Length: 101
Image (cartoon, rainbow, N blue to C red; front, top):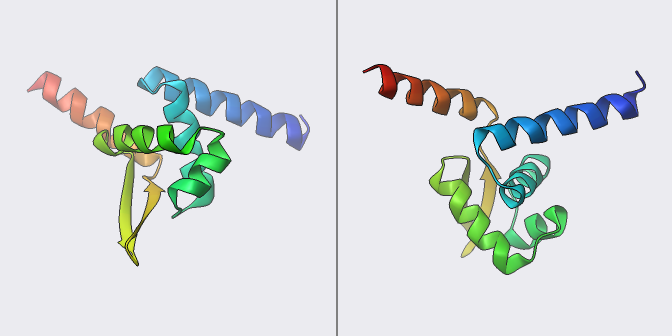
């Protein structure tokens, strides 16, 4: 498999995994943009994800409530950062524990 095809396969697999986790299409785009960019402003995240900036704020709020995105304030400006993909495993373990307790 060529490296380009491998990259496409990983991207599709990641998207499918995030869908199964319960993220909608906009949440997937924004989470992926946050992973790629690291700590970034809403404007940069919106540009990378291809989602309008005003909608990006709503999506970031939703991801933040799910524990998948956090932010810091620097010079009165918010910079958002994606949680590690390992966070999904932690969330699933917490859900499993809640069910078994």
